[in-house]
Image 1: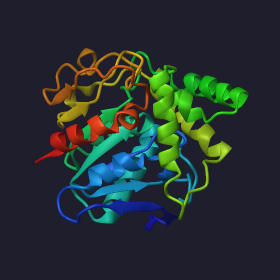
Image 2: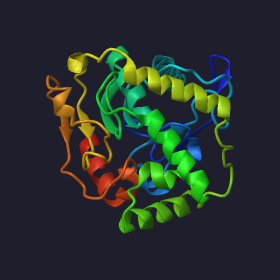
Image 3: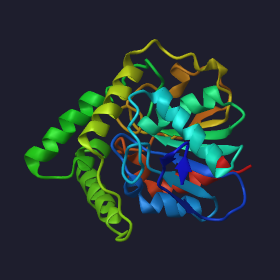
Length: 266
């Protein structure tokens, strides 16, 4: 699909009716990096739409180096699809983008799920340094970096990582190419800017928001939402999930999907 002259690769799953759920991806991710169990589970009852960010995977154009520009791209994409009301599920960097979209286009966003993410200027956002560290570790051990980025180093975490990586191989057709180094650098710069800028005022964001939580070093690498979003009555978090890493929604997809569907009910 062409969005203001830029080709955007996307996929739609599930029924045609109801408010669509737009999935916003993490750093370096392409369409094929979404866990099939999460996408298919959500699509059993909801219209689910995934896409490649500008300059990433099968999408054209150049990759933005600010979260705000990514948010503008997201709004243009949603508008091009013909929707005027959507729900958002943002994972890590995608959660940053979701927050900006909700703040700048409040009438567009009905509900949000923010997983493994945090606010602009919030404490604990060290995604860039953690990504570099885990990527180097993966190269040194000849393993997939996602094993270190998204899962704990426990025995159950390692099992979950292997299962997740196997699931990503299930789709054999129309697979995206990996993100380019230049696009990865642009996204990393955007994340760094997000983490060091002045703390965001989230008190004006009033969309009902669900924050899947794990232990302090898990799904969110920052404090719980109540510490920085105290004035939003719609914000809530689920009970802690033990031994869950940054990719907790993948590791515990069997718990996450039904809770997400229940939260997204009209």
